[in-house]
Length: 492
Ligand SMILES: [Zn+2]
Image (tube, rainbow, N blue to C red; front, side):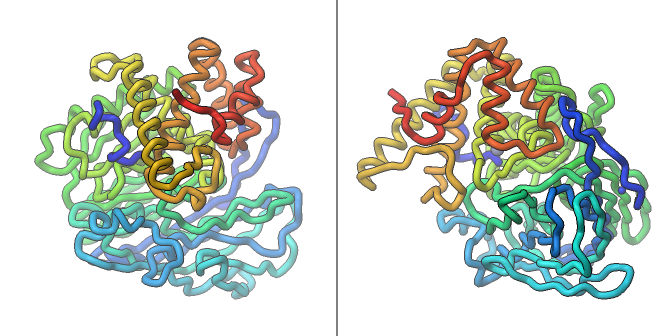
């Protein structure tokens, strides 16, 4: 995600489970789970009904007695414990006042009959499905979930506005299971992107009113047009699936190698070609810098979104609150960099947000360093970030007497959005910029490329990142990383 306010511009599927090699540098071969979603949008697109079929692969070394799924839409309930929107952003996010949404699980079943399930977690945020018998490692269990989602009138990842209907984090998605740790069940949070998931294959059918156009993760394989549109979509080896509907989309596309990069603006926009141009430049730059993009589509989608932008596999949201082309460009570049850091190389975004976010912000600076036409000098970006961070420490120290400047904290341990932003985006990007100064650009490039090659399609831990950077640069960077991540570094 990229918040606009953080921009430096004020200062400046099928039942056959295919086998995939997981991680280009690894010898491990794993099957991935499969999701099949049959989604019917209501006529007003303010709710949806879906039948989800999942072939869940137990990729852990433990036998499982249950499977747990996130129910993110329940964070939009009236009495949710942890709102997706902070108090300071409420007015902007809910332009027509309070509005609520939720997910209702209608039925959970498998070919032999109904399955026992309960809605649990800290705040009705987890669907717990009891398995009829233990699922051993590498075994597959097929189940179906019928559910209904009510969308809130909110400019968020899930919600509708006057311009777009955003459908992300709308379906039950399996929690990540780790040996020794169990299921990862974090609540939604207004700070950062509180998500963590494994790569899977998706086959999706969406039925929606023909007055709307669709942008989505994956590739549309068949389109039926009539009173209603039916889009059939395939998305393999992605860690989530999202789509956006709008009656206002104006789409422009450019083919780059085998990939179609599309920018979805609104009818009448003057800047759609500029936005497409930046999207293509950023896409090409990161392919060359980090490694090739293995999908066929990338969609950059303007939308009603309270923050600057948000990343999903093959699809990013760009807020229509962006005022100037500079804002669009910065957010587009940042969100596209996330296709590498989050999309391909995944991480626990709740507990280690810096792994994708700090690296993405640093990658954004690198783009502007090597694309001088945008008039954003790299040294000025670093200097502005330094000043901005120092100002944050000074003000927070004066007001609170003490300030926690650690980068590595769970999202709920950041008191405010600015504190999260300054530590994870600003200071986190400065950490990588300082490292590049130490080891040189060549070794830094090698480190980022190795991290990508080794962990694409997987979830990397902080230890994985640090070990990869150590090996690729020839430096022992453990102490360097820890001093920055734990807040011991003083930036002068
Ligand atoms: Zn981001």
